[in-house]
Length: 166
Length: 328
Image (cartoon, rainbow over all chains, first blue to last red):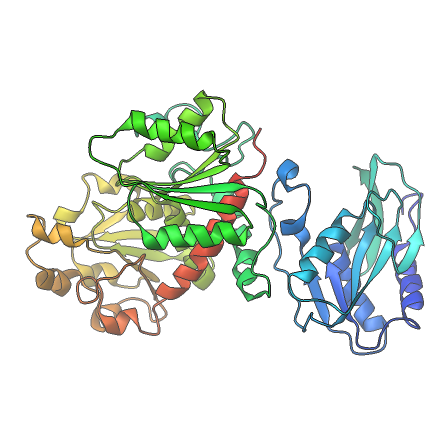
């Protein structure tokens, strides 16, 4: 484990512990590809209730398309529940600038008008450029701008965090 | 004009190998074709949303420049651009036989002055989209992109890509496939684009089936196996692509009659039975029922002609959103 990043599995436990007493029993869990999708899948098994799973790939909603273009292998956004009126927990691995969250919320609204959207993140690393704050957070870390945190998943489904140059 | 495309750097690609214009599938690397097909996949489901749009090309002006009529291609490009939130301007410019290069480029200069971001070009003259792309570079407007929507007998790359998408959707791996393209290969830009696309993607056995009079000279040099006998050519095929027989060809000396053509090269249930049991049948449209294809086949269980149309929108969305990205 790199110095400075928490253990992913422990952060996931902490996140689930914060969500359990507070999340609506029928809230849909929507993970942002790719790390957020893994966490959404895990949380759905850890938190009691009936939580429909959905996934969003925000590539078509990103604000840096004119600068960065489209990344290869965009995934299909799949929200297999009625978005209109739904209680949704949007889930991501690392909350940083807030731009992915903005893109994801914009995308959700193209499927309907959700009743409520909350935000759950494994790691909040600060550095926000937009006014989004997590409703539930697994761990907070301070991280230099020239570093990025990467979540990975091994063959057994265990999550781990690493630090790499941005 | 066609010689220009083969010299030096591929004019479709930017300095870092990114797709700046889509002019032809000839010489387009397999990675770019795969990137387009992969990107098209998530676009297919956009139509199922409450808001059938994504904001990628918000505020961009897409000009449909159709110097030659084509309702279907123009409409699908228009839908594709609108689903990307672009502003679409349709210009149907009937071109008189006397107006040539100069007036075409004058038109382009005027549209540039209207702040176009992307031109979708259909032209009866082979090489017109390429000429426009070179002109844009020459006048320092390389931030404007060109997509070829069919030029003369040369190329129809988005049709070729949607055919590739359809084949990959139903058959997965190109390298295991036997594909037959049947009909008027000589006059068909659709056939030419598909041949280049399929050979780049490494299809196992690519066949063309046509009478001698409807085959270009030295067609084998494109990497295809030629069959004059349709029954022999269809044997074991996984994919059968029928081409439209343009009625004007009937009037010339190339063919005896529509009835004779249907007898020899029309796709009937009997002939299709010679292909693989799970073979799919494709057609770029519009179809001439009873000329190149029997209604029982066109409307049958193996026909994927209508899915081709649906996939065509997603593939054009992918092309527009990839070319409109940043270019070095």
